[in-house]
Length: 191
Ligand code: FES
Ligand code: FES
Image (cartoon, rainbow, N blue to C red; front, side, top):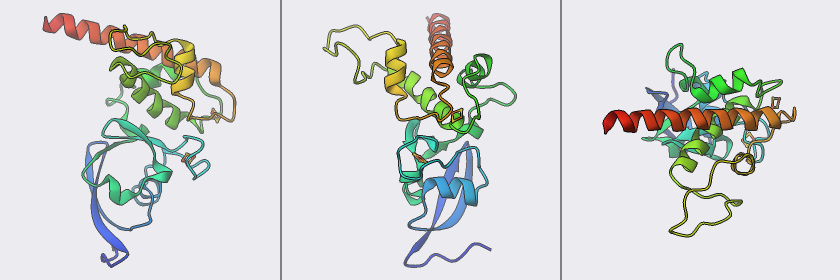
């Protein structure tokens, strides 16, 4: 039975992958621990537990966060997406499919975080957000292409101890291309 809320804990509702979960958490509980230990969503990995490796990356309201540095109570009322929520039934998310097709992993430990991060970075780039290596960010400048350098910079918060960086970058580039093609098709259909 869930413990009663107290001065050091609160009853919260977490919206994760389209489902609502009511739970009482100590105020110090991280989102990562709530996902893994309380909701059994163990796809999100704990690497360093101090914000340095990106293994615990999830999406909160479509933005990537390192869940080891986020409090579960701060996620109340927001939409959390973990690796378990990426696929559409049996259809893998295009980023998942690209990682699979191009062997964008070795042991796979960093992969859920890499994929969550990649999903967000593709959206960030499509929305015109620059990165630290974007050469020109003037108001009249055309969006920079998502080059391998851009992908490396935008994924630099996600470490891979196996060093599978080459196929990871290739997988993100392929998924971004697929994403751009589906956006064009959707825009043409709507025109
Ligand atoms: S486990 Fe969160 S950044 Fe490493
Ligand atoms: S695939 Fe092993 S840590 Fe990245």
